[in-house]
Length: 292
Ligand SMILES: Cc1cc2nc3c(=O)[nH]c(=O)nc-3n(C[C@H](O)[C@H](O)[C@H](O)COP(=O)(O)OP(=O)(O)OC[C@H]3O[C@@H](n4cnc5c(N)ncnc54)[C@H](O)[C@@H]3O)c2cc1C
Image (cartoon, rainbow, N blue to C red; front, side, top):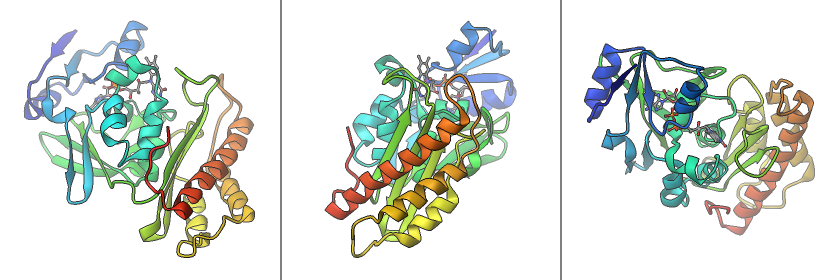
């Protein structure tokens, strides 16, 4: 197996163009497991670790551009105040070792329906910046990035450069059900983001459909129902209807981690719960704080 080690982003794109079968490796927390278990035997590995640009993040025109190689531990420490939903999700990934090596870029590359970064990226309206040597940059809304079980919108010659998202303009929460508290793949997960300036709600559903997905009808319903200006109490009927619509957005399966029925039920509960947390923050004016 060849081991390609570009030192710059341009060289990485050139290497991917010349070797479309080369498997990118960033933290390696998915790739190395697959190779060890002989799930994959790529013709080459394309090591992106020396590419410094990938490990950087920046604020550009009011948005954050976060390099594909920024590990979870830095998302939590450096971006937790601006991206609280993603930081909460990052805290639930694996163990300290996995969070030191693993990246959102790798989560996007793997595109598992259970990947923890996907629901907050969806709820926050993130875009994924991908690039190829031949065609340059494409910006793909997170909602269009996941195309099937462990499949994404990348062409064989493309790499993920970064994700773009706005710093939280309101409360964000992430909730995950696992069979224990750490080192666990989500049975199902849910993210909510309130965008009070736009009077809009964002959602992301994880591990309850072939791809991570938004609960669009739930977003539309809640955006219209919330008392954005008056900040009145959350009517129970609104929370329940929101939960029902989130449940209806899911298309789960029965598997070793849980049944479809359980996932639907749990999603409705998580939706109501995270909404209550978020709405309480909005009422109290403590939007955007990271929950620990
Ligand atoms: C013990 C353990 C626990 C885990 N727990 C969790 C968990 O709780 N939640 C969770 O979501 N995941 C979990 N994972 C899975 C994994 O850690 C995550 O998916 C992580 O985000 C992968 O990041 P990485 O940088 O290590 O990716 P890598 O393993 O390097 O790559 C993953 C995939 O992305 C591709 N890729 C990487 N970078 C790029 C790029 N720039 N452009 C295009 N493709 C790219 C690779 O080719 C590969 O297909 C766990 C893994 C292990 C081993």
